Image 1 (cartoon, one colour):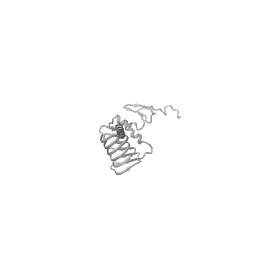
Image 2 (image 1 turned 180 degrees about the vertical axis):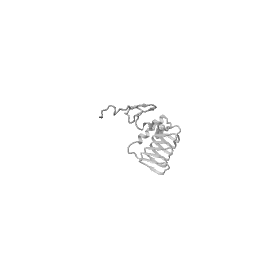
Image 3 (image 1 turned 90 degrees about the vertical axis):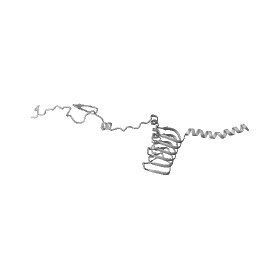
Image 4 (image 1 turned 60 degrees about the vertical axis):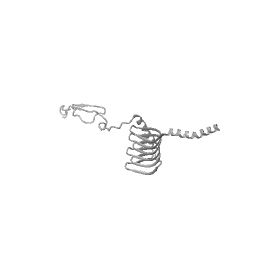
Length: 203
């Protein structure tokens, strides 16, 4: 009764009307339509507008990860002075990283100091690495490295192990490398011995 050959006829599917998921890695096209199989969200991310980054000199880009390397340890203590915050008359100790986005007047001995573009620091600092985008005024000793970015302004008594200044950055005051300071100290220590030797020869 139901074996009539024309009762259930198969209709031919046309690729243009076929819907539903396609196997991964396949690509098909119908009239006027191109389909490319990509992971979900890939097309959205590629079409998002990109903000052009400010160009950084290659030498400065190589030095930047030094702050990440020393400050990226697990369990580090970090103090952030946010925008519009003023911290005055403090002594900052046992702080691995100080990030200044507001204004600070303090004495500090620590590992890493970062001054943001709108930040300002005034005081005495002994630090391993200082990275300056904003303003610093006072006495700064960067035992390992001093990085001054294009917007950075540093003035005062400055001592450093290594220094790198991006084009546009400013540095003024009593500026010396720790190596030169060490040589001056050794030379000053040697002078009394030389005078004693000369006095003995003359006598």
